[in-house]
Image 1 (cartoon, helix red, strand yellow):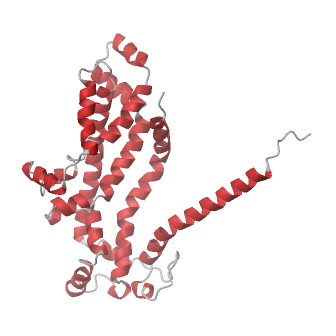
Image 2 (tube, rainbow, N blue to C red):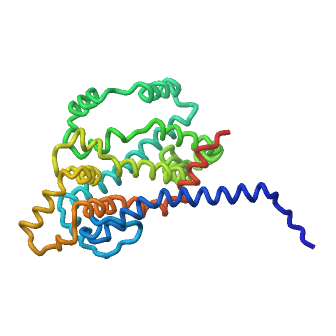
Image 3 (cartoon, rainbow, N blue to C red):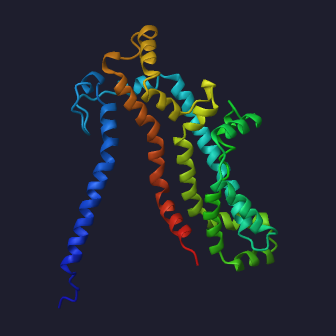
Length: 300
C-alpha cells in the first residue's frame, strides 16, 4: 500500500518555476565571470575578432604571464593581502569587545554610549572634513589609513551584540564561580561560541577590504601603497596598460610573446587575478556564513 501523500499539481508547477528561475539567475550571474575567464585564457589577437563566450578558442597563458611581470601588481598584492588580514582581525577584535561589553546590562552609561555611537550612522562627515581629519591624524600616505578608520563598525557591533544576548547568563556565572576572570570568559568561552558569527562578519569585512579602492584613490599618492583594486581600476581605464606593454616590448624583448596579448586580454587576466583569491576563500566560509546570519537574525 502506498502511503505517500501526493503533492498538488499547483505546488509541482510552482517548484518547477522556481527551479527554472534559479537556473536562469545562475546563468545570468555566472556568464560574465566565465566570459572574462575565457578571454583571459585566449590569445589576445584572436579575442579581438570577437565571438568568445565561455570557452577560449586558442588557449594561452601569455596573458597571465604578462600580468605577473608587472611588479606594481605584485607589490599591490602584498599590500592588499596585508590590509585584508590585519584589517579584518583588528575590526573583529574591536567589534567583538565592544559588543560583549555593551551586551551587559550592568555596564554604567550603556544607553548613553549607544546613543553616542548611533549618531554617526545618520549624520556623517563630508569628504573634505574626513580628509582634514585623516591629515591631522597623519594617516595620509600611510598603510594604517586602510585599517584604523574602518576598524569599528556600529552596524556589525549591533549584530554581534544580538548574538551575545542569546548566550545564557548562567554559563558566564558558572565560569565566574570556577574563578574565571572577564578576560578569560570572553576569550575562552564567548569567542569560541561566537565563531559562526565571527566567520560571517569576517567574510563581510574581508571582502570590503579586498574590494576597496576608494581609500587608495583619496588618501594615497605613494605608488608602493597602491592596492590591487586600485591598479585594476587604472588598467580598466586604460591609463597604465599601453605604457606597460610598451615597456615590455622595448626593454624586455623576448620575455613574453606580445603578439598573443592585447590590452583587452591583459585587462581580463588582471581581473581574474584580483578576483580569484576571494572566490577561493568563500566556499570554506559559506557554512559559517549561513549559520552566522541565521543566528544574528533571530531575536527573542
